[in-house]
Length: 269
Image 1 (cartoon, rainbow, N blue to C red):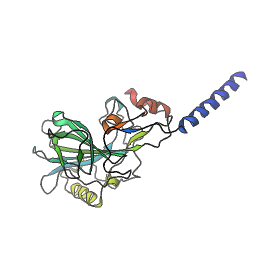
Image 2 (image 1 turned 180 degrees about the vertical axis):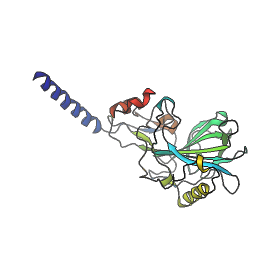
Image 3 (image 1 turned 45 degrees about the vertical axis):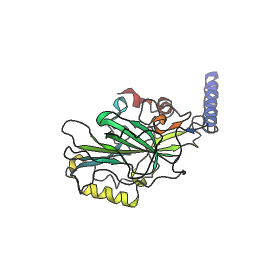
Image 4 (image 1 turned 60 degrees about the vertical axis):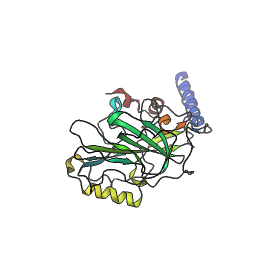
C-alpha cells in the first residue's frame, strides 16, 4: 500500500513539474544580427534552383529531416523538410537568395558550403552544398531576393550540380521546457510564392530520372507548421540556433527526445 501511495505521489509531482515547465514564462531571446525585414510573418519564397530551360534535371525530391543524419538516421519516411534538385552535367549553377533577409551563417567548405538567411524574426532559409561563395559575403549583411550567394556544389565524383533548400521556423513564444523557444524544421513548399510553386512544378515535369525522384512530393503538402518535431536545436545538428542567428536558452536535442520518449533515435540501432 505504501509503495502505491509513493507511486501516486511521484506521479502527481511529475505532473505538476511538467505543467509548471510548460507554463513557464518565455525566456529572453536575442538576435545575433539585425532583423530584416521587420516582420514575424513568413516569406514568399522564389525558386532559385537549376532552370530546366538551361540545364537538364536529373532528379527532384523532398526528404525527411533526419536524412543524412548519421547515427540519428532511421529507415523510415519522415515529414519532408528539404527540397533537393540535382542537375545533369558538371557546370555549376548560380545559387540565389530565395527571399530578402539577413545572412546569419556563411560556411565556406569547398563544394559543401552553407548559407543561411533569416527572414524577419521567425524564419531561416538554409541553402546547402553551396560552392564559390563570394569573399565579400559575410554574416550580418542584408541580401535581397535574387542576389547571388554562390554556385551549386558537386556532391561527389560524377555527380551533377546539387541545389538544396531547407526552412526552419522559430517558436519564440513556446512555453515548453521552462519557456525555452523551439526551432523546428518545417515542410517548405507551402511557403513558396505562387510563381515559386509553378517553377517547382516545371522542374518536376522536366525530370529525366523519375526513379531517382519523389514524383508526388508537391502533392504531399501538409500544414505549413507540420515539421519533423524531433529535429530541434542542438550543437550537434544543422538546426543549431547559433547557425540560425539566434541567442537564447534553447532546448537541447537529447532533452527534447527523452521528454517525448524518442531518445532511441540517438542510439544508432
